[in-house]
Image 1: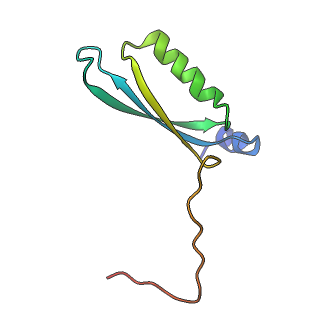
Image 2 (image 1 turned 30 degrees about the vertical axis):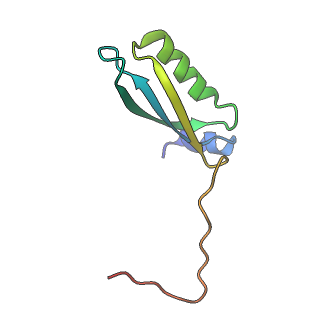
Length: 89
């Protein structure tokens, strides 16, 4: 992790992952996936909005849908040990 990423985390930024489905320019009926990951502010996502604006302006593939994951949107379940040990294999 870089110093800039750490400073962003201290400012309230969190790791954001976006799954972007877009239409191929040569085959518009075919969808392709692009995964974008960056530190961003929830719930406004200014970095993601800037990236999507760049995409619309500069790239040929039309956007189909964007699915966003961020730690403030959903968190994994907490697991607490209850004095037991689980071993696999």
